[in-house]
Length: 359
Image (cartoon, rainbow, N blue to C red; front, side):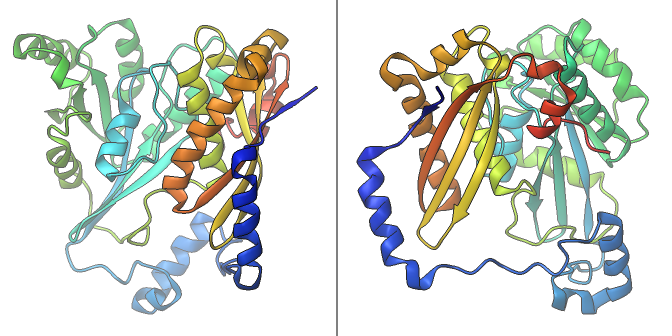
């Protein structure tokens, strides 16, 4: 039988919120460009010019000399890409955990300044795949190398440069994009060790520039942003100001729930977990969400549910707190746990969960 999380302590409060707002629910915003492809939107922006700004097309709303472009954060799993991304944006948009392959989806996050717009592309860690899911994650990450202006090759300064980095470097070298070496976790090593790491990394790729950062300590984060922007071409503001990420709400829910699973469980469970947001309803004061957590074996399901449902309740509570900060309103979250044997080698399931590479 599926396990369902219902936060009974908050049920009355949520019902009261819904009752009070029945008359003033926020209408769903109409998007006249929802059915257009990226190529069609680009063509419309170019044709519209300054007039496009009146319709939410932002290319005409940029000063002369404005720079914009895309920067891919690539590297081995656990190099610190998502932590750096969050530090650059100034808010949490990408999930993080000590578990390898935490990032499974390509995410774009936007940094706006008066004279440039920087679009970061956070990619799954590039690694030698062991299953169908791993192959899809690699395809997603490697595809970005040919479509960006700058590649930020992120290397953990506290871990010796090794075969995994060399394997990634082979793919990075083939790209025509500008290549920047980014040494993360600078707070964990001394200067001598850092210089050794830089020398070892430079032996792998002919980098155009190098920078050392510590995202957790805020060291060199703004200089990192400025450095990336200095290599961007002149161009339009691709995303409106105030937009932090292009990830939709349902995907954010699934990712934040999965993050809490990774942080609460160990060993074989994290890699076997997939999360799907089944329903998402937003009103003025409340977001009501239902998500399903998938695992591959009954034993993993038992671990996630926990004794008397305690584990899944903790996971739900942790996720709800983050989602409330993200959406700026109360969140009512329901979770199910289901077993889907071998889903990581099932192309259909990988696609349904949103982890498949999309051309």
